[in-house]
Amino acid sequence: MTNRSDPVAAAKDLVRERFPGAQQAWLGGSVVLGGATPMSDLDITVLDATATVNRESLRHLGWPVELFVHTEASIRHFVTQNLAERKPTMARLVARGVPLLSGDGGAAVRRYCEDVLQAGPAPLPAETLDGARYALSDLVDDLQAAEPGPEGTAIAVETWRRTAELLLDVNGRWRGGGKWLMRELITLDSAAGTTWAPRLDAGLAAALAGDTVPLRTTAEDCLTLAGGRLWEGFHQAAPVSGRRSPAPQRPR
Image (cartoon, rainbow, N blue to C red; front, side, top):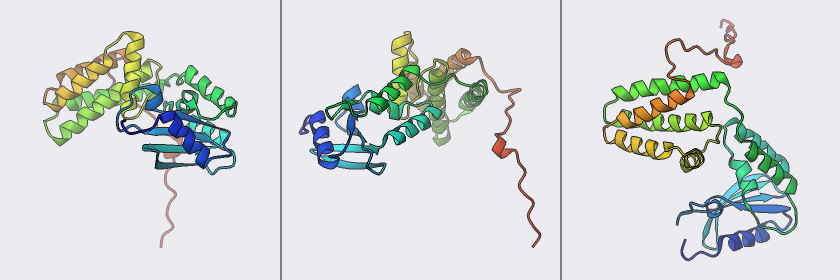
């Protein structure tokens, strides 16, 4: 991050310049929470009751910036949407972000986001858990038979992802996307004294090199934690929206 101004100072300057009527703004992401790299950007969430809700990518004072402009209602909307995905993205940007404006603007919605983070994701419904166990069991079988090459790579990567997500689900932890999936798993390991993150990392590397045993073993251990393998006898009803037969077409 050489040749860049202080991230908080740069973020404050951008908010003052672009949003003079903002109630509050927060700087979040890796530069605040840790794990920043030379490619990291500034994740700035702006609370402005008069603005049109939008997101924008730009550069400011040498920094790439991801700008998220919200009202209080839109923040709550996206937190709810993230909860359905078991991800804390919006809530974390607000609750763990560094306030960029003086005063207590946005205090209520920040408390709401803090409460969401503290509560964690809802318990996984039994039907959803069964579906995840079934999907991972099927992938482990596919991985055992996989040949090196494009299909084997795809199966290994999907096994890695599904295992990581199921581990987080059964431990009542948030999910994440991309690097945040592994960061959530590392946080779980730190809290529980487990070694899932390095096992999955080593397992995927071995699978891509042609040895699928370590990844399959880790996935099997995850399945044991989740209630065991599930394939034969698995049954799941279609969602209500998919149970209706199409309306008959009028003859032409």
